[in-house]
Length: 507
Ligand SMILES: Nc1ncnc2c1ncn2[C@@H]1O[C@H](COP(=O)(O)OP(=O)(O)OP(=O)(O)O)[C@@H](O)[C@H]1O
Ligand SMILES: [Mg+2]
Image (tube, rainbow, N blue to C red):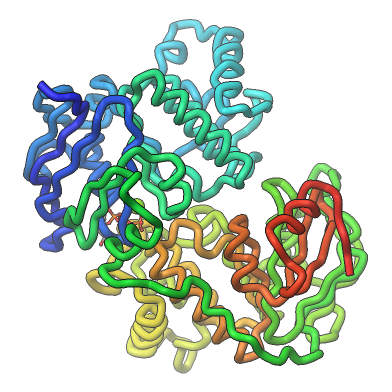
């Protein structure tokens, strides 16, 4: 007997000849938070899918023991019944259904001959309270931000009362305040004896929260250590197999006075006539990187979705591109004006998961790979090859469906696609969410290069170190308004937080 709740021994899993997991060993103690770290494509999600029966017994080799008993899960339901619950990296809620329906899909309450909606709403409110969400259970999930949807996923997992809870990048979409809610919750669960497997690229969080950490690299177990023996540097070194000294490759440079974008007295409403952002004034110069900071719900994404031709409501004010007043009515308009928008929600706006890498990357830059009005396959493949090499994409070949790539590698394709179109203004909404430290650095380098070529960059990010590390200027929003503007020299975490929470300074 031992105090291990879970042991995975010699797990090997391949996808058409490519080893995603190679003899992996992984064990978790009762009531601990065990972090699982590794670069994009290292095999973290695959290992958890083996554990939770997504890849059934027989499709991998090796063995799984739960409380010293060997398990051979044939599907997710079996692993759930045994006490294992997984929250996937990609959100799995049904957008068209309400919060309550999503929380209790498949639950006995929903299977009763006459569904007791009052009871469901009552329990939904209790479940939402646990994750400190104060929303009506009858809200449609698609009306909520990604961050709130993530909290609902967690609430849903908790209704299953798991013994082992797997969180695959739970905080990628959460802001700092929501992360702290989650951390409190996980600490509570640990006290109740629940074991958590925690996958995250945010190493500061791993160090704060976890009891121990296992590192995977290229499908192999590199190490398992007590967290007290680790530092951010030691984890990074093991993950990437070399030392990384610099995190933000910012380059000091002259910024021209020409404006790519000028927004004056801009107010935007949603379909129902509700104001989403009001009285917005700012500009972005050629080759300038402007960071947009703020808490979740501050209106940053909404502002840029609206400027990009989304949000089907009334819009007031003036928008100038290259000094000329424009009237962007749709994303197609925006693209032809030279704008590019890398969305925070890659599943919804970013990728066609069933299509291959090449086609996804060249999707909007088709004019660059056409000859005499037909797509030139050679040009297309060549273009896709160039950009994906630059992004250090990890994939066996470019014919793979993007749905089969690891989360971080999917994000790289979204970026590739927009960069390929040579935009004048590149709007990046949480561009490094779910991306490992090594690849982040590559993406920052690309941002720098583009800025140097004169592209205006808007960098929306919840990660303050990223905003501070990469921006020439930082604009802070709160409740749909701009509440502060700070130069690179002035900007600090504290000053940004003051503006983000309502107080502010501009100038
Ligand atoms: N269904 C699939 N078909 C083919 N290859 C796959 C499939 N699922 C995963 N892979 C490959 O297995 C490897 C491991 O992927 P996995 O999703 O486990 O990585 P990860 O560590 O979770 O990365 P990330 O941090 O980017 O989420 C990758 O090379 C990926 O392309
Ligand atoms: Mg993953």
